[in-house]
Length: 166
Image (cartoon, rainbow, N blue to C red; front, side, top):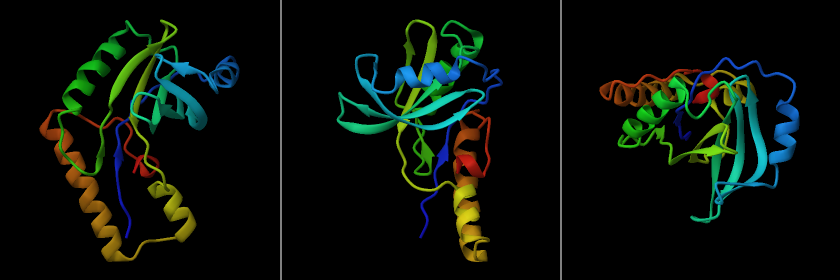
């Protein structure tokens, strides 16, 4: 019925301030790392912006998360992110969206690439359809718990687990 995926994400507390809008407008249509062509914006938050991008090397659509400037490429947060991605990429769990690349845009902004999963997240699904039937809710809960267990087996923690990331 419903395919559930846990999106790995980095919680952040950037200021979300002024030049964010200018940066987003400038990125539309650009290509990052000579590979990822920015097609459209999917979501924006204090920690950065997620774009729909075309991976020109693989000829597929991906989600590209451009972190705000608080996650500088040489920061402790960026180094921790690199370590986590390395460990995370070895996970074999169907419900997890595993990052495929980590790069730097203009030598100042870190970006993360993940497979693009089209469709509604759990929050959108609940808003649209209302409460789930108990057996569907149990299946969703089981899949989420299995994904979290796979993360915890690798000593990884999902930093922003919510209906918006399921």
